Length: 188
Image (cartoon, rainbow, N blue to C red; front, side, top):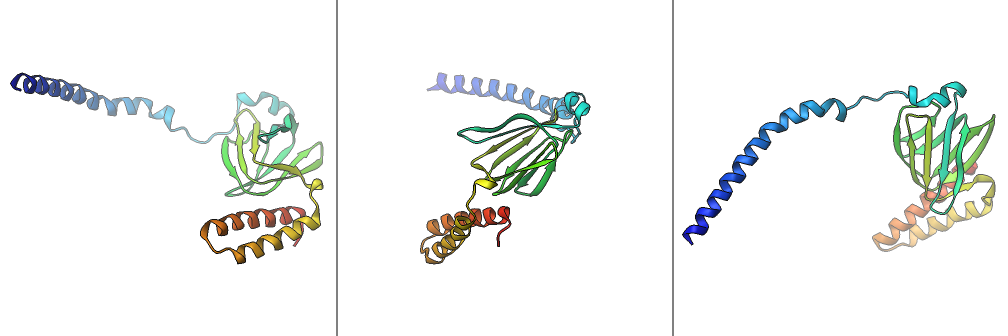
């Protein structure tokens, strides 16, 4: 018993000394690293050489199943972010944003390409590239207007008839998505 207590106390003293040395170094380490940890928001510069020459954005839009747009040069992409609608041009500051259900508009060669996205993430990089990873992404002209209208009524009815929290939450999500589809289509 006595030898074990002595051994344990020596080990504790050794750990305490090492911990004391380590904690003294923490402020020095943080001060030396803080400029690289906390960077201010900046616009793209050298990394965007292809964009500065053409003033265009490189866009990739993909879902878990397929890639819809792969590394194409576009004028602007309008993203339905959780914090609001965002327009992204070449040389945009780096951003990561969650997508809400809504209209994804891509302007390429003066033409608008409209898609409905149900959610996902958009990554805007400082080299004038944008990657959009959507759960679902469907061209607007592939959506049946009448089916969209009837889905809103269907999910409103389902929400009204829901008794438990889980089915109410599921119905709310489905209703929000159906309403977003109708809004993207310009329907009331």
